[in-house]
Image (cartoon, rainbow, N blue to C red; front, side, top):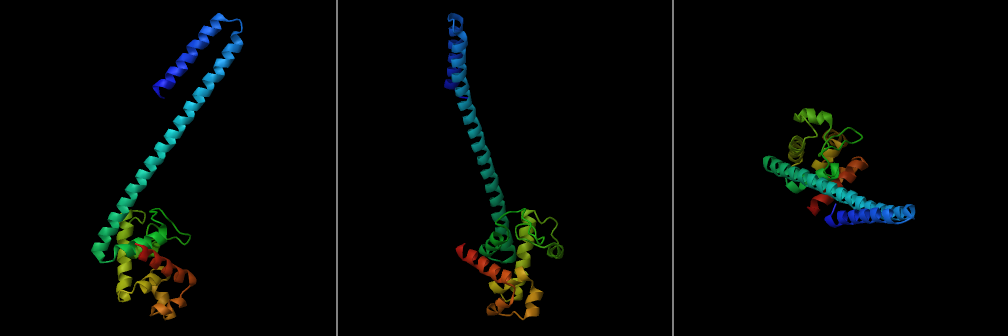
Length: 199
């Protein structure tokens, strides 16, 4: 509460006490000052709540910035370790989870890079919601798929989303043949490549 606001309240209180002691209409005067005092206190309380809300939002933004900083640092490390472009990792995370480390899909995929429990087990991921663990494992998996398709991003992404065994079964060996995959996978490849080009 500001000093001048405290002074106003004290002044009104003193005026109220003086008037009550010197007038026959003490009830009317007391009521008038009570209304003024209440309005002033309501205004001050409203400002306090607003300031606390802004402060809380500021802390939330700060926490989000820290989370994003950790994510981008993990992406950089994984990129250097597995020789996968940072922009491609970012694009996958963007489409998969919108950079939410706690994301869980309806099919059970978890974390930033939306890894299924079976894939997590294969990759030795201990905690899919841990930023470093998820990105390290997801990037390693993406690298194996890029290698399997001679570095072709679209085919690797189709395998990441739709499964490499499904691609083999459907005879998907070229980018043009991705349309043999389910529509979800076709859309996924387009979305990730669109985000990749933005970065």
